[in-house]
Image (cartoon, rainbow, N blue to C red; front, side, top):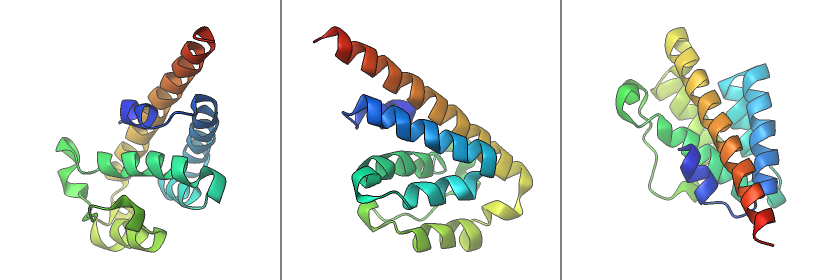
Length: 130
């Protein structure tokens, strides 16, 4: 998922900044705040934030996390905060299971760390091609 975040974004410096901020929110305030932060980005950062949050949400639909599977419609532009928070709070009940919540937090941290490394590598590559 980290590779997907980096591959789908062409602004390495801006991506690095937003991923770093997102990682900070996740580490200081947790999964709920992290997702809320990504949904609250301004128009300038909205597209980039959508790519990050979609990748994070999609991780819940992969193998060992099948118990946390979200019912997300195909078009990610329709994934509103209200819809996603209802899924996490009421349908999946992620915040009722402390072990699952810590697993998701750790998974999100690793994904964002690798996305940050990828964005930094992309910045270095873009400087080298000028």
